[in-house]
Length: 346
Image (cartoon, rainbow, N blue to C red; front, side, top):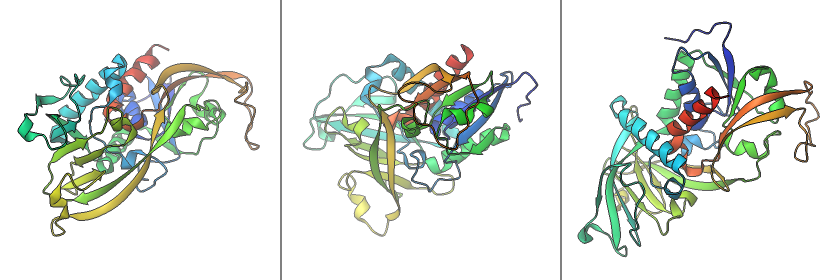
């Protein structure tokens, strides 16, 4: 049932319609007792799944171990919340369970051994050369081409408004947010150039993959040369995907050598070549609240678009949620919970 908003509803504007922004909006509208009137604002919308101007359509969209979860307790919790949520969604058909193996030159203590399902140490006979250690476990994956439209349809059913807009300054959003509203900034790499944010710690990580149709591959595989490979993209992977409309699809990154069956042209069909820019950030993701004062002042806000009219003095409550690099999908539900906790405390 669509949410009904009364006169006391508070505006919540989510800037960015990638997986982080959509998941935040989903939780914000999940409880009909929450008096939030949600609007999505983005340059790229869920119907733009062929556009290479944003990362979410081309992500691996699976859960894979990354170093930050073993360092930052908050990220560890976000990973656990998201993994558990995806696991619970398996019956919907949007999530696929993948038997998985991960080989590496060494086998240090793995922070995520109790996060995944059916974790075990591989015996020597199951470890491919030249690796000397490896593990097996069950993980999950989603298909962005179905998952992003699903999130969008859920939000539209809850009367969430979608506004297509290329935002250049936070000043432009003041009429939508209003005096008592809140802005969630999930603009990804856009936060590097948007006036009022201008986060120079953001940087892109280029990712390239191939989507194929191959019913032979049902196992997630990953080879990484070092502990940083997963977050920098310098690793080889095979990610089987769920599919309601198109089944048997697999995302490939790195090399074909992990799966000789891919050389069988009768059983393998190349569907797409994907290129995307992962929104990474020096020092890790930004997830915090800020009060932005208007008009924008300071050394970072001296250049204002010629066609922008200031609305005068004022302030805006902003929650920043961006810079998740290759971990957007696998932290999305945990990040959304943290954002909602910040909003309720503002």
